[in-house]
Length: 528
Ligand code: HEM
Image 1 (cartoon, helix red, strand yellow):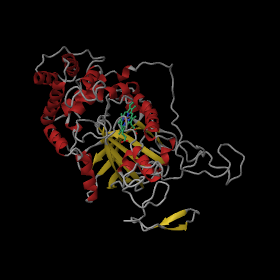
Image 2 (tube, protein in one colour; image 1 turned 90 degrees about the vertical axis):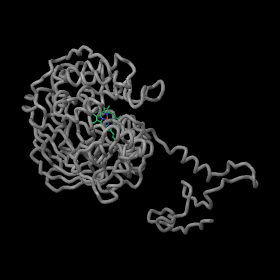
Image 3 (spheres, helix red, strand yellow; image 1 turned 135 degrees about the vertical axis):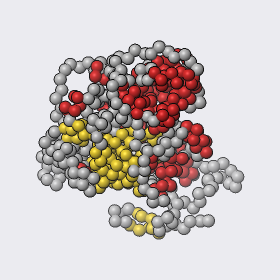
Image 4 (cartoon, helix red, strand yellow; image 1 turned 180 degrees about the vertical axis):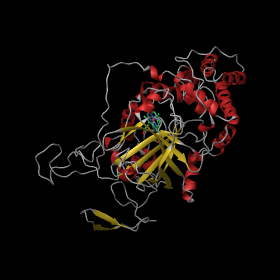
């Protein structure tokens, strides 16, 4: 049927606007030209060739040809939702972040949950770490807490990240792992990386197969800083605690679910929110000072370590509620860009060498992924507070700055001179004392790779321990190279002899000699 040409009027901005009821617009080309059919291309004669003159066809195909953008280099598969974050504490003594200046302050939030290793089309219930990335649109700019559902990381230094990810992704010669769901390359890498032992135990535990996004913790992982109005710093660790509780599936269930419904986790979040069952998380923090940090038997800058809650208890300071699904998966979930360097006044970094590398990596990769430095103008990424600076131009600039001034300082009068720095309201980097000479050598304080892995193991119930053993046995039994299996089990002998023995028995291999720890393993730390 033929569409009727729209009635046109001159809009406020002097542009031609098409008058149509929302949802009942006339179909147009990308240039806004109304079109009479969406079915047939322009041909010469009844059965003749398609004409180059058919700009309607070319416009449509051109837009379609460029619909895909690169997937994230990690965390490619994810799902997200909108919500609200409410501060439940006045922390003005500890941080000058406006959000925590008063109990009850609320800001809009967007969250993206993800798996790490699989591509965008992979299944939801992989045994994998889950990303837990939160964007808080505060009055003082966007604050991203880009975390995972496991409180520690595989490596201590950003220098190792590309190797870790290469080992975890599909094998480059064939484009899939060497064996079903398990990688020789991954186990080879972690076998050579004793610092990965702690996180690998978590990964073999039930935590890596959550029942759904709604039933998992989130962790900022790194030690960050809160900084108050006097410039005083307090170390802070971020924890998201689900009001729904933490629940997992077991591996045979995960395998079945992946076969029956590979979108199980995204569907679960969508269904819950649409049925009014809004998931919630408490934001809890561990706050501690330099003296406490010095007293702890490991380095708080080492992201392979937790801060035991017995030493520094959790304190709830806010609540996140997810209550709105996205309008469009691509525009919001795919185009959202999180970055650890997105902090607000009152929040700052520490010298954790993994965090420092991340602060570079996210912005950098997003230029490739989203194609333009102006991705901060996309609705999902745009701050909901005023943005004013002299950044200009670039691909896909959608703003139209007015006036002759694009630099600062300048002598133009108020009203024309543009934005100026302000001491009072601004972000000030924490004035950290630094010393020493440059070097490329990890500190000795990062040298204990097994003691906390051991604490994690002995903290598990017998059923949970059995699941960890089963996880290792399943994964390692798929590993083809015997020396790779031996390397992993040799490391695990430093965690617990019984654990190592059960795994060796499970895969039918003799117990290898224990690997030599860099530092003595502490057996005096209590379960947590
Ligand atoms: C995503 C780099 C460690 C959590 C990403 C992306 C990169 C990256 C390049 C893709 C971002 C994008 O395309 O938008 C790194 C580097 C790391 C590191 C270089 C270490 C040096 C970590 C750690 C965590 C983490 C320790 C957790 C605490 C995430 C999450 C996402 C992500 C949650 C997905 C964000 C989203 O949903 O869009 N990472 N990462 N990463 N990373 Fe990391």
